[in-house]
Length: 236
Length: 373
Image (cartoon, rainbow over all chains, first blue to last red; front, top):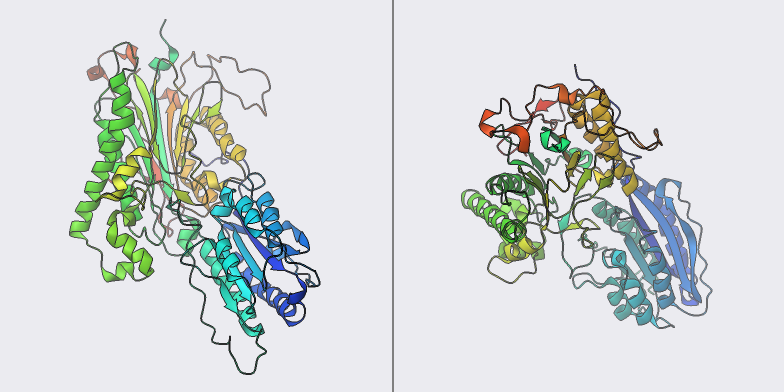
């Protein structure tokens, strides 16, 4: 009579999902902007853990890249969300080297270190100003990487001085626009939306038709928070 | 001297399980598999698997996958043995398999889709979850809703053909245990994106998908006298994506040979649904489908030992007990004589496990007809 036997093959594991915060730490972010951002990401972590637990077949790995005077990894190692601890960013740099941030991103989106079985990564760019380096060159370097093209690229424009044109180029998707936030509650709300709704939507293993013209999987539209112009809030 | 392989009977099995994440989301198994039909003659032998894409726009992809395997069986099963008498490929053979077969499969698949749409047109409810842009895409190209991949293997008396559109893997394992892919990689297939029988949504003809789909096939045909694997694996992407690395996945090939040698083909086929359930739960979460075609050992066939356990080169083991070849199967191939004289077709052993309410139950898989999706 037939009996069950040990399965063939090597080690199994959930598919990696790389989630990268890309944060502007120029001096103009100093104060309430960076404070709200630190608060929002830290507070959103338990919700991210919940989303990850509901989707056990993807392993959410978080990193943080900061840019100001140059670009450096704030959390350099991809860390599983349940083990990830946010450490606050300071915003005191002179400069907004967004182009260098793109180049740093390109390095980690090469394959390897990226794995072919990963699900599309999520890249979230948050900035309040104009790049002070050659952004287009950095973006070009980034977009030479196939994984960058297929990433879900989201941009959050903080305050009225954010360079919407550059952020739109980063998104590279006609149907998605930079998310404009003008006060602390809206920044917190959008960071929470990215951390939960977007993360959940990209955690699916379902395939899509190959489409060379559209970047990454479709994601839900951001919510209308109705707090951007709240009278009792400081407006950025 | 008679080649050992030409005397070997082919055994086949397969299973398809609903993905772990699909169970959590109450979604159907969007994969399909069809095994060779029990027939009077052992050839042609066709095994096909398909993977419905499952994204929001592909809300009928479970049907598309079933159509794909059904059409593959018809098209590949109907082309005869288009080689010279000595088994060499002719230009006509190559044209038939590499150019005509994709066209025929695409045409047949689109006809099945059209027929289904005729009797089951989209209801508003089908599209309620789509964005305006996605609705327009479906309205312009309804076949997108049925989008699926297809992987198939055809074995005739003289050749083996590997056929694939979209993601998933076909692997071969040689008598010496070497695992390889008979088809070239398609670098476009990553990040959950795949080519499809539904074609590219950016096509421009009246039926934009079919023209592009036919050119997206990867096909290779090889005379059996030149290369005849010991084992062929055909799987949807949910299986390789469950492994930590490509090497961890490739290890399946050698392990299966050893398991079949040690435990017998019946035990392996019995174990398939459980293995695939485990893969989906611990790995990708996706639907997982695996088909196996195994050339049973003859006394002349070298025995394969895993390099990790047996560093010495494999030596023939004429006295090895082989449970799979102990079945009273007749020889097949060039030396088998008139196919009419065959007493039995190759074993048709397949299981599939889908009902989450009965996870331990392994049911015989129908040898013909589309699987329930």
